[in-house]
Image 1 (cartoon, rainbow, N blue to C red):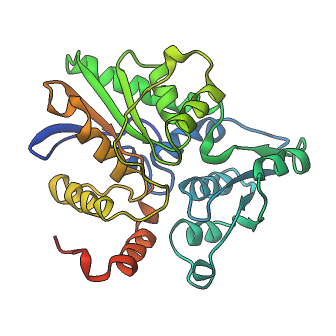
Image 2: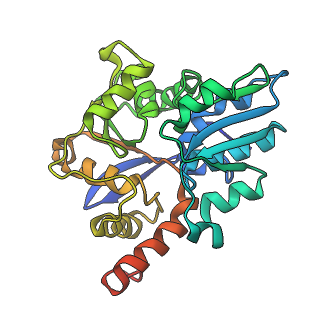
Length: 299
């Protein structure tokens, strides 16, 4: 198992050279930004802990990664979700199916604030609580290793002017990258708007000097909603780079990168692959159901 030193691929997208930090190749079962965020918990022992508790969506990448972590550490996992669709219950697939196979206990609880419910009712000395999406201080442990890998690569290749792009959910990866890098980190909010992402940054770090720069887009996108341009850029990136990316976060990541002024400037761009492609089968099925003949899988 390798959870460090992911390769960096040089490729071209829209006739522009970019570099991809291939965190999707860290390990087949434990990859992407979640492998970095949860690396602290993988590396350390918790002798009194018997169960991991977390929450999120029924197809969250964090659900699958935590199910792998729990299995590797011989712990139980209780993962709380607001809702599991009847379709998913009847046709398990993606992260949901793989997590169940790993022994995850996925609990449907229609509560306005699941985090508050967990903190008030479920925490004890035998429970390890990991916030949604790995938004915890311990995440810096693995993300700092990622930052060191980027610093070493830039030094070895004499790269002075480097811009790092990645999409954000909770913003944890982007924040801790910026805190441990001298290069500028640029990100785009995928789950909420700019104010939501800023609040996520402040939750982990009060000093704004460590906050990444947020790319502003003219159009507002709603998390989890299907957009034809998302699928189109997913296919375009796959065709140009021969690398598959996540269909939930990375389309907006690439749209924001291409819309930034740096895409047309003579600087080096490094895009951080978020992993999470296990959920693509579910997403592709959703796109096919929604757009039917309007998208072409053979492009």
